[in-house]
Length: 69
Image 1: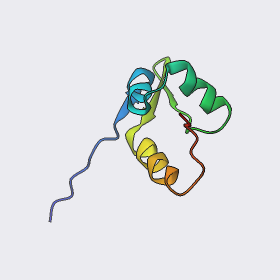
Image 2 (image 1 turned 180 degrees about the vertical axis):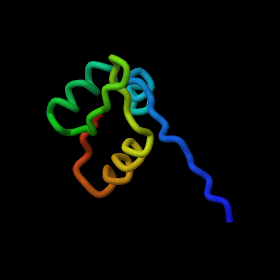
Image 3 (image 1 turned 45 degrees about the vertical axis):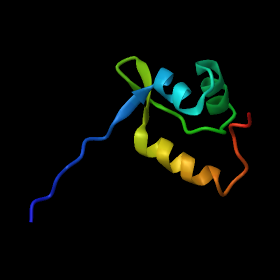
């Protein structure tokens, strides 16, 4: 059996903002307020792991939504 290693995928803030239909400033504010997972500094920019965002999405349905419309 061969193990396949999947690389960790990271996305920039503009992709994160589009995913949640909010502005980039809103993402930054939610991170400061600890209502959204922090990103990782990579090469001078902040990126988010897709897996972290997926986990956040799963927890949204069981907790108070951090991204109120």
